[in-house]
Amino acid sequence: MEHVNYDLLTQDIKPPGGWVPVLKILRAGGPIQLPMMEKPPSLAEQLWERPGPSVMASCYTAELKPFEVDLLAVAEKLGIPQSFPTLLLFLDAVQKRNKSPEFAALRARIFKERSQPAPSRPAEEEEYNEANHAAEADLKERGK
Image (tube, rainbow, N blue to C red; front, side, top):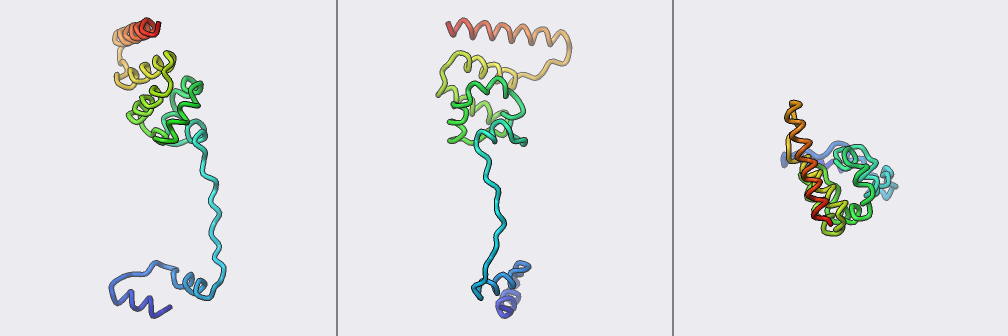
């Protein structure tokens, strides 16, 4: 084994530290113990419960929970959205599966909230709220 290290070093290749003892065990036919990996989280756990970069777990959980079946079906294909732009694309894919007016209104509200900056003054806040109410009324009319 030492000659392998020497051969690598003469070629300016630094062997990884600790590899000679492992090779000696393997060559002798000894057992190698690998650490047990924990079970990977389910899609539902990734979607709602696990802390991390998932925007689903941090925002809109209560509103999106009734559509969990469709969300999980899309997550199997596209993965869990990790940013708001990917959340919007994800919701578009869910919209193709779930054509309910409730989901359409929720998706439109999320899109509107994400595409408009938050108001910084009371006058802007009033305009912002009026625009939201008008959009919601428009969606309700279209849904009928």
